[in-house]
Image 1: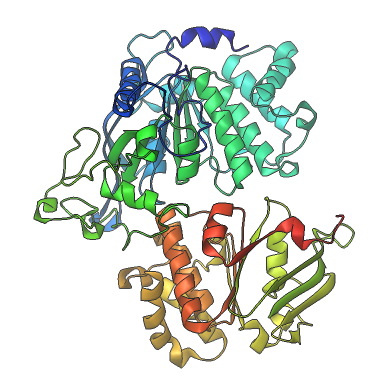
Image 2 (image 1 turned 90 degrees about the vertical axis):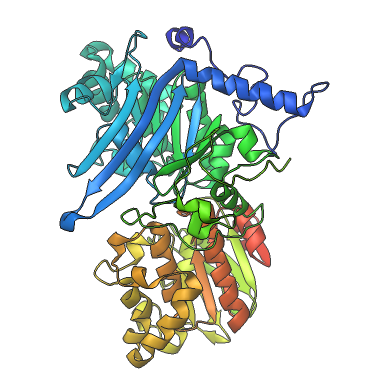
Length: 372
Length: 221
């Protein structure tokens, strides 16, 4: 059943020579290839990543989301986000809780509350590859009838809360099959079982209610629902929160497989280990801005991230320095005029009173040198 | 000493979640308890925190066997143990400001007069700034709320600290900051720690020793 999708994804990564795509690197670092100098290899890997931008399923430019609160205050939840996401690629959006990651995902699906103001563009290509739909400009009818579930699937943060507690997994799958594909009643049962099979959800658990499932199986059921419409874009919003490490690994490996089938995967997470496991590229968000986008092999490898915040976040891991970044992030309703990280940054100077524009994937006046 | 001896506990006497688990934490020691989700480690942590009465087995705290649980436990035992849970949202009264949340244990034990002084010590120790202390839980992030929940656990200067997946919801930097705050408290007071979790890398880095869940159970189980 993967055959039609595979033919749609001519540039599927995961091809030999694209490490990171396989998601099975045990040690951080760039795998050496005998006879190839390290810097050449890194450049080649960067080129592979850059090539995906031309093949973008989703192109986001200047995405900005503000919430107007009573009393005239505004919350700058997302500011000027730019990124491309290609078929077969996994982009991990990382950052601490409250930095705007989930708001970005909600904006892409048109699920923001009424007091939100958005600007920018988020172009989702059409299934036929023709000019796409701007998700930020589309009206609710278009989003509801042609985008959500059909062209963009959501893998939710809490499957237990996403599934209806009063109905079995089978009945929810069949309902989604009917709503999205209009399959006749006769073959709906088979279609639902096929959808479950795609996420390795065991067939003998289909007649169970959500509360009778373990966390991992509930996650697979929710993922199966997200895949029914055969959307080319998958948004996974903290899909591994609260799961233990084995289950995290299994869940993200499954998501990686769906990306390898030719989907574009945006993985929103605060779990850097999960991002390292499956991401091709990493986008770091701080105070509503993407401050660095880097290929995963560079970010987690010996070279390391270049933005001081990204480096601090990585160094806070227990298998690295285990040292917290001093201070706390600023309020999104009261952002400083210049670089939002400057008050916590060891490299800050007077220059940081003006906002750094992104250059070569880093928005910083004093980016760190590569470690190696 | 915090001694859990052959504890059987659960939510249905016919099907206990924990069967005969034993674990000892020496004074001043930090022990990490590792286990997969659903294995019963949180239930054992609740027993150690005097929050769940076991069906069988003993809990001995500094030589005193615990015979009453939850609100029935004598105050001097209850206040000897501080607890931090995984989910700060469900562990915080939404009506209280963070400042009130942190000093609630002092109010509950009739020591309201000490509240201001203790808050002034605890807030910087866990990294809470004055503008956050006047807010209620819905106005702060998970990480900020968990900082307040940790401060609350330390308010009465417990001899024992139970951290049940304290950092599972948090980003790497907040995790490192909260662990540093716990360790600073322990260095100052000599308190013992039982940290329950599934992150082997974290617990190995954090604790003096880590124990596998299966090694807490009787042999052959």
